[in-house]
Length: 445
Image (cartoon, rainbow, N blue to C red; front, side, top):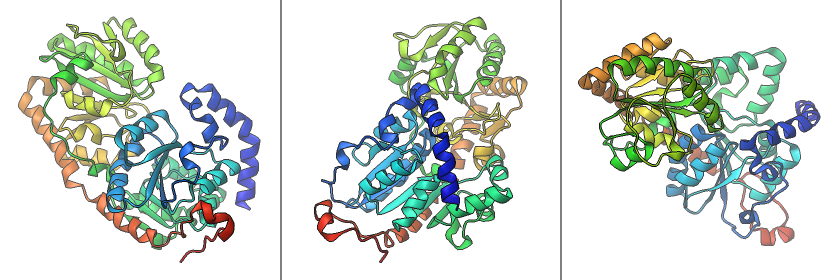
C-alpha cells in the first residue's frame, strides 16, 4: 500500500521536482544520470567484480565515508566500489579523497525507473548509506533483490524525529526501516529514536560517530597554503566555515570589534553554498570592509579585511591555518555542520546554539573545554579576544578539541565488523556475459 501511495504522489510531484533541479545550477550537472537516462561508460558490464555501493549525500557524509571506503578497499580489494552523492561538493570530495579507490556516480532520484535501472546496472553485493539518507524506492528495490542494506553513522535530529513520529507517517517510515539489514547509529539517543520509528531492535546497534576516525594530521603551518589563502605569515586568521545567510552579518559585526584591539587579524568566510559568494561580498563591502575573493587572490594584501573562500574542496585544509574556527549552521536554525574538521587540527571551535545535527560532538567539545557555545556577537567577541590575546590559553583549548577526537575513535572499527557480517549475506555476483544464458538468480545463500 505504502509503495503505491508513495509512487503516486511522487509521479504527481515529478514535474515540480524536475523544474526545481533544473533551476538550481548546482543540481544541473549529472541531471540525466540522476534521472536514470544516462549510463556511465564504466557500468557497461565489462568489469565483472562484485560491487559495493556507498551513498553519501553531500560533503560531510562523503568525508565521513572516506575512511570507511578506504578500510573496506584495504580488506576487500577484490570488490569494485561506487560512491554516489547528490551534491557537487560531495562529488568533488569523492573524486579528490577516493581517487583510485572508488568511482563517483550521481545518486538516482527516487523515481522507480531511475532506481531500478541503477540497481540493475550495478547489481551491488552490498549497499551502505551514511547518516539516515532514506530513499524508499531504492531501499524497497534493494530488499526485493535481497541486497543487504546497512545504515552507517545513523542519526535522527530532534526535528526529524518529531516530524516522523506521527501516526500515519510513523507507519510509512516503519515500512522503510523494516527493509534495512542493519542500522548502525551514532548514539544511544539515535538508536532509541530509530527503534521508536519502527526499525527492528535486533538490527539496531550503537557504534559511535565515524567522523572521529578521520586521520589526524600534524597542526604545523604551511607558508605556501597561507599565501594561497591570502593570509600573511604574521597575521591571525579567524575562519568561519559552512556559514549561512544571517550568520555572516553577525561574524562581520564581531570582527569589527575584534580589529579595534587586534588589527593583525583577518576574517575568512566560507559560505556553505559558494553560489552565495556575490551576496556575501556585497554585504561585506556595505559593512565598510575591504573584501577579497580567494579565487582571485594573486598576492597577500595588508590590513583588516575579509576573505571569502569561494573555491571548493579547500575548507578542511584551510582550518589548519586558523587561529580560531567558527562552524556555521549554528547561529541560525540549520542544525550545524562538521565541528570536528577544525578540532582535528587542534583549533578552538566556536559554535552557536543550533547544534541538533551535531549535538553529541558539540556537547563533548563544550564539556572538554575544546569549544565554546555562543549566543551571539557579544559572546563571540569575548572568547575571540581572550584567545587572540593569550596564545597559551588558545593552544590549551585547541589541544582539548583535538583530544576529543582522539578519545572518541573506534566507531569505524565497530562499523566495519558489522559490515563484514553482511557481506556473507550478499546475493551471488554474475558475469553479464553469461547472464542471458544463466538467468538472474538473486537468492540469498
